Length: 556
Image 1 (cartoon, helix red, strand yellow):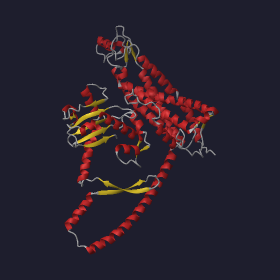
Image 2 (image 1 turned 90 degrees about the horizontal axis):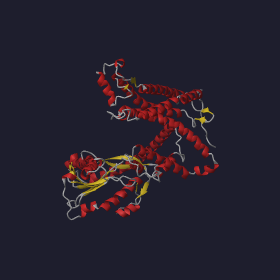
Image 3 (image 1 turned 90 degrees about the vertical axis):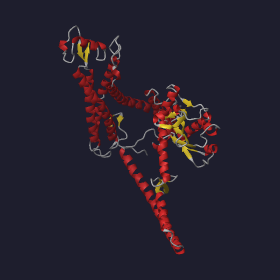
Image 4 (image 1 turned 180 degrees about the horizontal axis):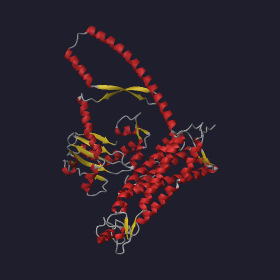
């Protein structure tokens, strides 16, 4: 039998399923954050509007704005405009005040204040009683939802008038006719905030359109001809994959492809993430969880993990006790059989033991059902080898930062173009050269040999440099920066390394790798082999870098 939860019926065809005590509180949190964003935009606009009114910048002279040269010519002809009143303007000038900004800000402020009050009221009403014992809160919530429907007129009016005003502003060369504007009013910071407000109102109205579309989709789902195909797990996964791919494509278009996205074809790139998300949602295309479910689930998970840790600690203590008893027996036998060792040598040995430290950590096993104790070494400042490791980490981490922007800047200077995708040095010039170094970034010891800035689903930007100071060849791989990078990050299903191990000369049986990282590593491997950079650095007779070691850094 299907378990049903209490639902609040607003009117016949509109219910809030599933209905629980904190369902509306989640809505209040989201809407509250939404209104805070709008308030952050409204307050600077209020200040800018007041300053413009005090300075007279909201005046329109013969329908010319302050950004038009005609506006300034009119005031120059009349003297000091700071002390000039509207009545003193003569000579056929018509002066009006641009009251649109003031009216828009007042209306937006009233709507934001009303919605803040609505959010607080819904929060209070949703906190009364429980889903099974409402204690009259349904009546309060029903009235508040009707009020929300009524206040929808505010975003409709604000968005409609706002779009019409923007279109009117840009007509006839921003109202300046044949003259060039002194500045463009749609390139200022207050206009950007104004646009953010319009976008928030548009998104709010899209919610109602989404509800209408949902009703249409439910009607289509109820059709017997489409029901069987629609509710197949494979069909659900494909729909979710298409939605995620479409969302990324919209983000790419909104960013004018500056954040990448040209290679996103929506043909299986999001399949792994979509299938895992469906498994989390119990093979449904929605996650029906509320705050109470998350709280109870977190508590139960913490309890299970605590029990596993306790069992692992008990097993470790039991094994340690047996080891101590055996060690004490062996130590007594050694003391009776051998003479005491030199005191200084004993102290030196203890000092060496203090320098090499390790800790015991609890980790889940391969099945994820039990905890196991794992010993891990700890880097300390008292050990020379550890200090050297930390120094090298600090030294090479700079390369991982350079690959994002600095290397591209050097390549653009060398090739005198901003659209460079590949750079490779002439292998006949093996000696270090200053214009190939990163001296401008305080690293004259680093010399660039090869760089690729191709960024796709498989291709990833990377560079090959030579470090003269440490005498190493460094491969620096860029991490996540574009939409394609995010898509590959979400391809996280583990892939076996058997075939990779056979190709590269290591035992990959039983070992796995992140699918997205492995895909890009294969592309890099083939590209390095194709460009033959490492082959020339390590195999050429004229190369002074034959004995250099290879270091790979980056890739987050």
